[in-house]
Length: 324
Image 1 (tube, rainbow, N blue to C red):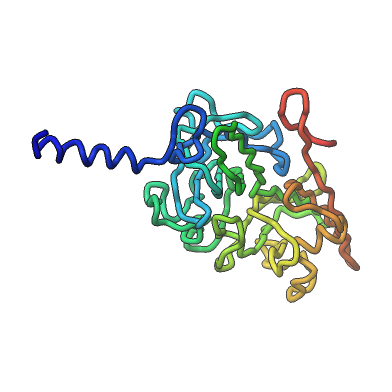
Image 2 (cartoon, rainbow, N blue to C red):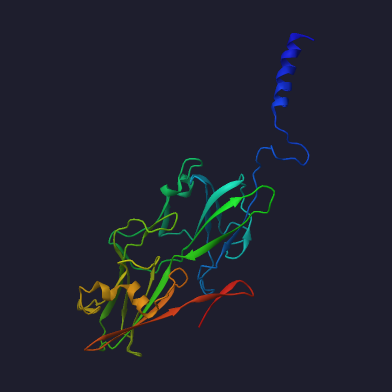
C-alpha cells in the first residue's frame, strides 16, 4: 500500500473509531437535535373582551437558560392566521433541548416601543436584562389620547428530545380602562380635566416596573346638560398594589379649582390603587382591567364608590365575554 493511500485512509479510520455509538435505536451518545415547538398564548390570566379590536401583532423572544437571546418570531397581518389567544401556533424556528425563557409582547405599536429594536437583538449576545419596554411620552409628559391595548406574556420552559413540545404562555393585559362618573357639581359649561399621574411607562422584559419620570394620562370633558353628570375615561398602563402612584385629580380647567380630592395636598385620598382597594380589598390587578369610579360631591363631603368590570372566557368558542 502506498504511503499516500495510507495517509488518506488512516485519518478516516481514526475519525470513525472516535465517533460515539449512534446507531439504530440507541441514541444515547448522539449529538442533540433541534426540536420543533408548538406555542399557545393562553388567556387564563388575561382579560380581553370580545368587543375590542383584533390583535394586530405578536413578537415572541426566546432566551436560553443563561438569559442570552436565541431567536425571535413575529405574528402579524402577513401571517396566514392573525395573532390570537388560545390558539396553537408552530413558530418557524427550532430549538436544541434545554431550558429557555419565552417573552411575548402583543400589539407593539406606537406609542409603544422596545429597546433594542427587534432587529437589534443579537443571538448569543443580547441579555434579557438589556431589553426594555417603554411608552413614548411627549415632551409635555402628558398622554392625551387613549392608549392602544397591550398584552404581555412570560414562560420558562424546557425543550425535550423526542417528545411533543407544547408551550402554553400565560398572557396578561397591560392596559386598564378607568371610567370616572362625577355627580353633585353645579351646572356649568366649564371644562373639567381628569388627570392620573403615574410612573408606569417603562418595564423590564420580565414585566417589572423600571425607572420612569412621572407623567400624566388626561381627559377633558364638560358636564352633561341631560344627566347633569361629568364623565371621563382614561387608559392607563399596568396597575399593581402597594405603589405611591397613580394619583387621580379632577380639576375645573376653566377656573383652575380642584374638585377632587378636596385637599390639594392629600395624595392618599387620590391614590387610585387605594381607592380601588377600599372598595375591593381582594382585587386582582392582573385579571381586572376595567374600573368605574363614582364620585359624588356636595358642599360638605365627597363620596367615592368603585365598580369593577371583569371578563371571563366563553368555554364554547374561546372568546371572552363580560360578566355583567
